[in-house]
Image (tube, rainbow, N blue to C red; front, side, top):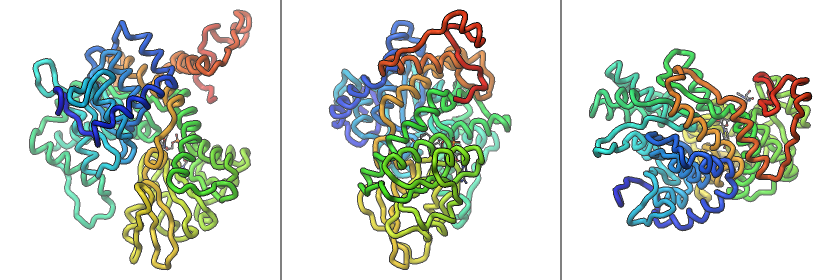
Amino acid sequence: HAGGLDFAVADINGHEAGRKDIRLAENEMPGLIDLRREYSEAKPLHGARIAGSLHMTTQTAVLIETLVSLGAQVRWVSCNIFSTQDDSAAAAVVGPNGTPENPQGVPVFAWKGETLEDYWWCTEQLFKFTDENGKIVGPNMILDDGGDATLLVHKGVEFEQTGVVPTFEDDDLTVSDEERVVFDTLRRSLAEDPQRWTTINSDIRGVTEETTTGVNRLYQLAEQGKLLFPAINVNDSVTKSKFDNKYGIRHSLLDGLNRATDVLIGGKVAVVAGYGDVGKGCAEALAGQGARVLVSEVDPICALQALLEGFQVARIEDVIHTADVVITTTGNKDIITTELMQKMKHQAILANVGHFDNEIDMAGLGRIQGIRKNNIKPQVDEWIFPDGHTILVLSEGRLMNLGNATGHPSFVMSNSFANQTIAQIELFTKHDEYNNEVYRLPKHLDEKVAKVHVLALGGELTKLTKDQAEYIGVDVEGPYKPEHYRY
Ligand code: NAI
C-alpha cells in the first residue's frame, strides 16, 4: 500500500526506467494515442471497473493508461508467470505524475518469475475494487488474454452452485499443478464467502478476449450454454490475428532465441509445430535467418500453405531427431512428448510460443528417471538425459517470446490494443444489446484501426470513385470487403 493504492510489483523504484520505455512506446502506438484524442472529452469508460489479465509489458502500460484516460478504473495482472516487465509494472503503478511514495497510477499485481501460487493470488486481486464508500466490489468488465480471469469467475460460480470444490489424489497425473492451485484458491474462497463469485459475476457486463486460446475457451463455454456474460473476440479482428499473431511473433521469436542462446539460426534445421497465424510468423522469421524450416500440421489447408511457401511438411516424430530448434505454436496440448524430447539432438533448443505450457510435456520431462536440470540463466534450462545428451528448454515451456524477450513490439500491439479498447467501450456502453455469446467487432472498426496505422507508416490510400464502388458493390467509405473475405 502507498498513497491509498494497493499493488505488488518487484521494485517500485524501477518506475523511472519504465516511464522512459512507455514514453518511447507511445510514439509507436498511434492506434491508442488516437483513441485517447478521440474520447478524452466523452470518457466513455467512466464508471467502468476493468479487471485486466494480460502480459504486464510496456505496451500494456500504454493500454492501461489509455483505458484510464477514457475514464476507467483499472486493476491489472499478467497472464503469464514470466511475461511481466518489472520496470513497466512499476511505472504503471506510479503513473505519469506520481512518485513511489504517492503513486497515482493503477493497482498492478505482477512481477517476472511468479510461482503458480503467486500467479493465482495476483489474479484474485483483480476482483477487489473499492467503491466510493470504501467497500470492496468486483469489476464490471474483464479484459482477458488466455481466459484465466474469466475461468476463475466461471469455476467460482460453478462451485458455489454445487457447494463443493472437487479434490484430487496427490498421485493423479491427469491433474496439473496449475489446476490444483486454482481449485485450492476456490476452495479457500468458498469457505470464506460461499457467494463471492456469484456476487462478482452479477456485476460483470462482459469480457474482451485477446488471444486464440482464450477465444477457443469462450466458444466452448458458449456452445455448452455456460457462458456467464457477453464476450467480444478481439483476436479475430483482422487487425489483431493477422498482424500481432503473425508479424508480432516474426519479431519476438528471434528476439527470444537470441537473448536466450545467441546461436546462429542460419544453416540450422528448425521444426515449427502448427502453421496457423503464429506458426506462419515463426516459419518466416526462421527462414529469413537462413534456417531450413520444416512444418508439422494437422490441417491440410495450412499444410498446403506451408508447402507453397517452400517449407517441408512432415510428422514431428519423423523429423525431430534432425532439428536444432523446435518451436510449438499450435495452442494444442501434448505436442512434444518426453519420447520426442529424448530423440532430440544434443543441445537442441525446445521452446513454445502457444498460449499455455501444455504443448510441451514439462511435467513428464521432470519425471524421467535419472534426468537432471542445469539452470544456465533465468528462463534457460539445460536438461541432461541419463545418456549424457542435453536439450535446452526455454521459459520452462511457457511463451518464450515473452519469457526470454519482451514480447511483440509496440506498433503491432497498437493494432491489437486499439481493438481491445474499442471492444471495452462497446461492451461497457451497450451491454444490453448483447447476449451471453461471443461476438466480433464490425468490419468498419477493423478498417478504422488499420487506417490509423497505414497513415502512421506514411501509406497513401487510394480512394474509390462512386462509380467504382457501385461496380464492386461497396460503399466509397467502406467496409471494403464482405464478411466471408479471408485476407
Ligand atoms: P491458429 O489456430 O491459427 O494456429 C494453430 C495451428 O496449429 C492450426 O493451424 C492447427 O491446425 C495446428 N495444430 C493443432 N494441433 C496440431 C498438432 N497436434 N500438430 C500440428 N499442428 C497442430 O492459432 P494461432 O493464432 O496461430 O495461435 C496459436 C497459439 O499461439 C495460441 O495458443 C495463441 O493463443 C497463441 N498466441 C501466442 C502469441 C505469442 O505472443 N506468443 C501471440 C498470439 C497467439
